[in-house]
Length: 497
Image (cartoon, rainbow, N blue to C red; front, side, top):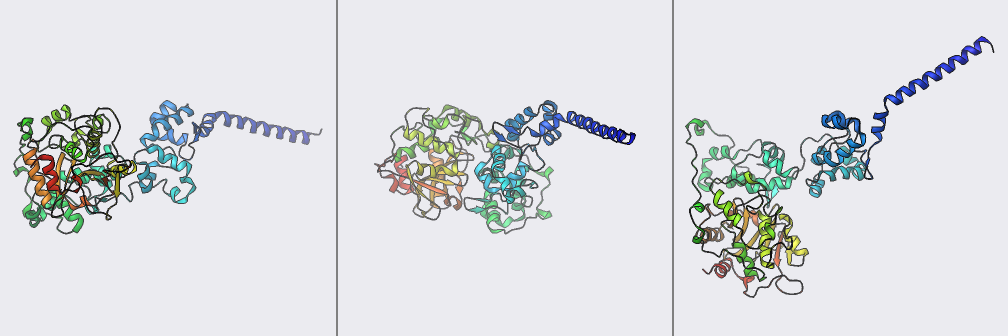
């Protein structure tokens, strides 16, 4: 073999060895990263489209510290905890963007964040529209603004509302329907600002001509501007009162703290298991005027499936009922009161059953009426198809549910519901509003608040359940003829006057 051939052979061998050595170094130097990039399957689900080990550990110090050398552990942490906290684990997928951009998915999944990831893994990535929404949307789009037939877009912005009200954000998460419910049922009453341009207190001062109509009711001002867009949003200097010149607010103790329950002119106990429309409405009045509104009350405890009015509701009412009661300070204070769905469920339970701890009858407020229809208990009407509100009708709005006490002679509707600040009789403007004020004052003197007149938006509903009182599958009867009575006669039949 001549020297040229030998030299060429040695060069080839050297090159091969160098490549092999370099490859080995490269291989062994990146084993963990290479292996990590391949660990994307957990419990037979491949998370590769929403998860990347390198990205995840680089952006979450806790994950890097605890699972930097444990690819399987990092993936397990992401699936079990990371997704619940909306962690972003991939450059190409941000669950927050996916939620913000997809209204239809929010209606399906609400705050079940894991389902958004799984939707993209299984279906979303296949469609360009979904892929384009996987990143880049930092604020929520197409959030709901209509509640009970009123469009609040002039006074309400989901992104602003949750950003400036931490308690709301904690409670509703990304559920824009629940956020609007909070604003309509609680936020307006408290005067909370829900977008950057409208402040109800400023609006009141800037439009003194409206005060003769609306007084100090924040709700009326919100609804007026939301529906008309009229009025000035700017306060003139001569209307501005310096903060240091205002007098401190004085809190008046609740009347209920001074009045014993013997002053109550309505029965304290429920009528259980009779399964008549009259007993159903009588039961609805038992917690009226002495039970405060608790967000979530009746959901995560046994209150909605318990017989009778509870002493703990009474104790909480006596301790907290006042003109300044703010239920947002007692969210999920289970056992102390009822929300609208919990109240509806408790009323039905006490009508159908005689012992506590039985069937679970609590449903989302918006779906209560349709659920009763599905069970065969009631017929169902949608908004516009039937504007007659019979006694006992269960009416589901977007985010609220109430029970009809019947129509008055002028067409106004008397109703009972649990709405901030608690279980109360209310009425739409007209004869019903007058009756509500009369009955709350005469029969429920513990109640320290003015009777609430609700807007006509209450008559715009997603479902109205009218109880089936005979035939196969009916769950209650009406031997007293309550369903055919006017509101005035219903209340006489129940209260005796």
